[in-house]
Length: 115
Length: 117
Image (cartoon, rainbow over all chains, first blue to last red; front, top):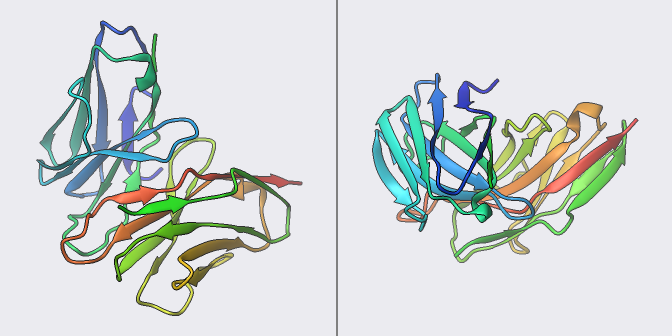
C-alpha cells in the first residue's frame, strides 16, 4: 500500500452515463495528479493540482472534469465518454512541486470500460 | 518536447540471474531527473530508482542499479539476482529540473519483465 486509495477499482459505463472516480491520499501531500494508462501507450498525465488549484491540464477533453475539494481528495467526473476512453486511470500524490523533486505515490487505479 | 523510448516491450530472466532494461530519451534541457517505476500485476506503481542528470555517479538501490550515459541519452536499469517478485511492468520516466521547465513526468511505454523459476 502506498497511502493512495482509489474507488471504484473497476467501472463499466455506457456512453450516456455520468460517473465519478475518487482518489484519497493519507500522506499529507499537497499535490495530486490524474493519469491515463492505455494499452500499448505511455502513461499520460491529465491534470495536476497543487494546494487544490489546478496547475496543469494536458489538453484533456471536457468530458473529463476534475475536482479537488481539498488536498487529500481528488475526483474525476466523467460524462458522455467514448469507447476509446476505456483505460486504467491512476491517481498520484506528492509534496508540492516547485522546481524540487518529490516522489509521486500512485494509487492502484480504476479500470474503466466504456460500452 | 521530451520523449522517452523503451525499445523492449517484453523481457524475461531466470531467477537469480541479471537482466538489463533499456531506456533512451530525447531532450534539449541540461538538467533533469530520470526514474524507473515498477508496476506489479496488482497495478500500484512504485518508484524503483532515480537519477539526477548532474550526478555522474550511477544510482544504486540494493539489487537495482542504473547505467546513465548522459551524452548518449541512455538510462538502463540492471536488476541483479532477479527474484520472482521482480516480475512487473517497468517504466522509464523523465522530469525536467530546469527552472521554468515542465514538472510533469514523461513516461515510456514500458517493458514487461517475466521472471522464470
